[in-house]
Length: 189
Image 1 (cartoon, rainbow, N blue to C red):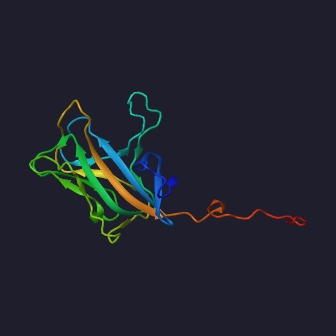
Image 2: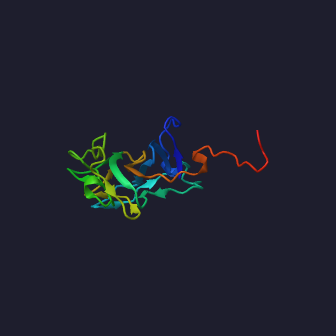
Image 3: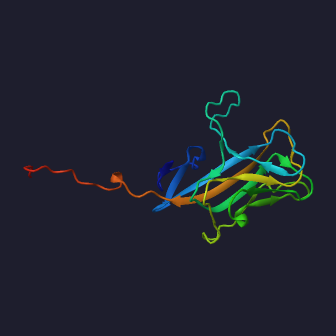
C-alpha cells in the first residue's frame, strides 16, 4: 500500500495502487471506486461485480488487469455510494452496494419512472457512528432488481460504486524519528 500525508496530494487517491492517506495520526483512510461495465442490456434481477479499472484504457492492450473491489480484513467501512452512467430501468427498480457485514451501510439507488438520479445515492456520514467492521476480506458486489437498459449503445455504460474505509496504521519504524548516529568508544567532540 502507498500511503501519503496531508498536504502532499493534489489529486484523487489512486484505488488501483491501494493508495491511502493519513488524515488522522495512526489511521489510514482509503477511497475505493469501482465500475461494473454493462456491455448490453440485462434482463431480470441479479448481481454485478464491480472492478477497480486499470489505468490502461485500451481494451486490446491492457498489461495491468482490472482488480475486484474488496475491503481488507480489519477495515472499518464508514461510507458507501452508488451511481449509474448511461443506464435506465423500468419503474422503481434499484441498484445497491452489497457484500459488507453491516447491511445498513450499503447505499441503494432507486429509479423514478425508470430513470436513476444523476447524483447517485450514498450513506450519510454520521461521525463514524454507523460503521461496518470487516472481520475477513469483503468482496463488494452490486445487487440490482429488475432490468438494466443501456440508454446509448455508442457510449460506455456502467454502475459505479464507492467504498470508504479506514484501517489502523502500522507501528512507527526507524524512518519516523531521528535516531542519533552510533558513537564508537574513543570518539569525541
